[in-house]
Length: 265
Image 1: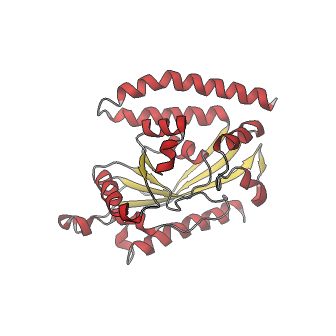
Image 2: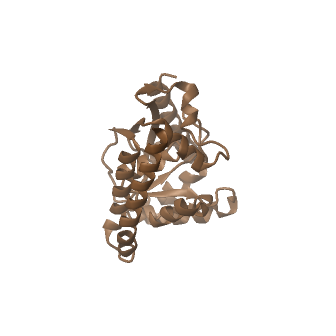
Image 3: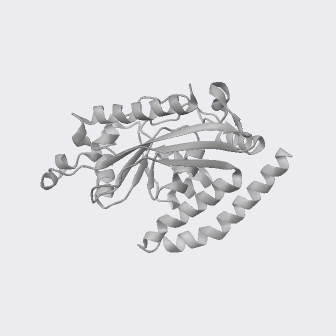
């Protein structure tokens, strides 16, 4: 039964890609804001079809400034992209390896993903400049500051260098009182087949190490639906902290504490 379900889902998603791809390609030739809506709709439909049960809890205060928002989230699985992409009007920041992942890389490019080489410290400054320019132009961005995936039970250390882009006064003297809103997001994978995963079984959802993506997707498709809670926390900015490291630690601790509470670890 699981194999039949998997084949059916693959066919449906393939048809969906074929139908929506030409539309997105045409819209990308324009500067219309709708070009960000099509990928969001696509990810929302795919999430529903494959059995992702998403519950969003929005605690975020309204964006109080005129710039984009930097959403920062823990990173657990390939499903994070579906979940966040279907909820937020935002562009992903991803490591450059994603761009080379065949169809997935092509779809990421089509979704206007910004790719970075997080192993090259020399490029971090130029990346921050580009990220900051996007935020100043009111482009919302989604970042995974861990730089890799975790097991879903805990959060790895955040790379504080990613938060440098939120410091507008440092690079724009005329914006001495302006800072970019940073919004932490907790991804909590809770149930599988309507049963609590627990610490041990949550690792079967997580994408860790060099485990083949296609094999992970196969396991998911064969094993039934997954429930995930997405908690969007209140926004903060650098003006509330002494430096970017404190801001980074705050976001990491907020996300970790919420995961621990939600999953009762």
